[in-house]
Length: 423
Image 1 (cartoon, one colour):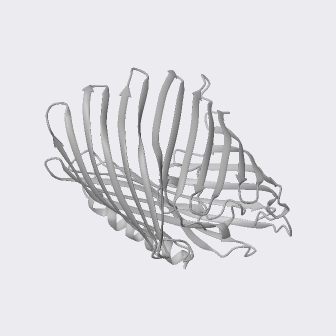
Image 2 (cartoon, one colour; image 1 turned 135 degrees about the vertical axis):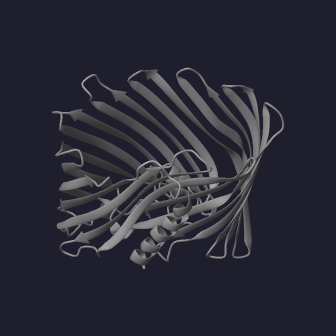
Image 3 (cartoon, helix red, strand yellow; image 1 turned 45 degrees about the vertical axis):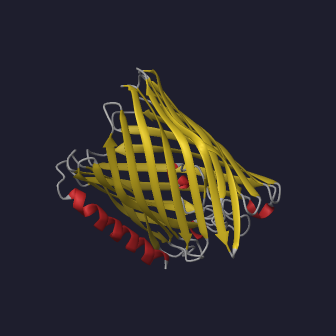
């Protein structure tokens, strides 16, 4: 079931992007790769550890079209994974980001987006292939912009959204979204406005989740800083098994990007929403993990920051931190996550780069009042054999400590691979 759905999703997504790509002038980047990874605990299990060799063959494509009547941005990859000792079944998987639009009239656009991701089903279970599923989210619809003068505009948008998981036990949905927004340009660097959104999600469990949101929007840019976001009020209603549950609260989001100096950039983001597990929140914020066993309305909150630093010798350092909470309203379950990651890259020679990564995640669950901690470490070498071919080798360790013995594990691994850019 899983491999069939992945192939179907990639094929459908490919058909969606064909129209915008027909008029492209920029070259398409096509790349392929092979990677083998030996692990001493393939299932990341607390008991009966099994070693295995995981091999992956992949091919990908990247392209951004020239500006024109139709525009598109595509980044996609599909891979086939094989386990030498059959710890897991061989299977394909893919990931993709696609955004496209076509101008069909004065102020009228038709937009299409498609996102394909591997997502974790349950954060309490180890992140192995048995606990992952593909999530495909497709969204399309028209957007009409009406100018009321030199400094005011009104935007009307209608969207259809379809979310599918490849595991039949997970909840799929169809969503209908309508938005009306007004924007006022106070000056070339400052914009403010109001936005009203209503959406209705129909789950394949016959449940229905309706949401209405009213918010004030803003964006401001300075010479080295940009700040944008929204703040408002949202109401969400869940209709399930003849019972209606309703909740509301303040919602909002913001993003601050600051160039501290020519070699250092700081990004801060925060978001709070009332939503459900079939939304795109975990796609927009990759650190966030939904508990896919829950289909009720969920209040999600996340803050994160990233500092990027480039040194004079060409070394780069990326420091990131995040904290998130998911509150499954109808069942009273809360899950908290917080983490830190440091990623350092240093050129050793003109062809060789050393890489180092340290990451820590803290997880807590309200229903059993437990906490877990996950540590990830790895170091490696990337060697540029020629302009098209890169060799990469890495060694790593992952450990999970928990108050529940069955959730703990230790894993050591080593990998090597080749990446080739065809064009």
